[in-house]
Length: 159
Image 1 (spheres, rainbow, N blue to C red):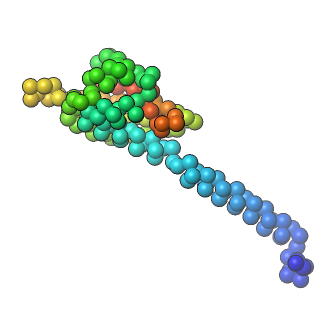
Image 2 (cartoon, rainbow, N blue to C red):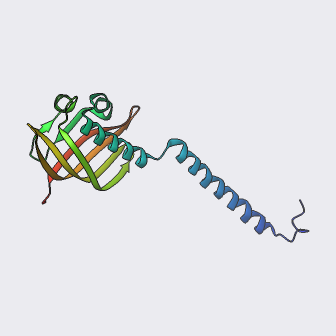
Image 3 (tube, rainbow, N blue to C red):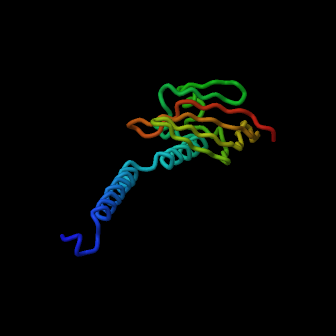
């Protein structure tokens, strides 16, 4: 290729080549990000799956979503392990509904930090219900099994 006949200087050719290299680098990062999936979206799906499992009392889903070393701190100070959570939730209708709002998600390497507000209708038994308005902080870890809840803490909010 005769760059002089095309009216291009060596500088023009080098600038164009450099721009091409940068574009390839950006494209490869974009392709890699899509291949790995979007960690924040994946975590949001896991948070929603946990919410549904809590409402449905779905022990199988809870077993997969909850890390073996999980600690689950209630707004009244009770702390549950994974075993406690499964005993108290699986196969039961403890929560009639859980509505999530004001959710934020941050990813820090294999860790996800989720904050949101829970508006909960609790099944108190004998046809009675109670409600809770709480701020929730969750710590999730990404493993070969996907995102798993490692820690959860709830704090009562004013109504």
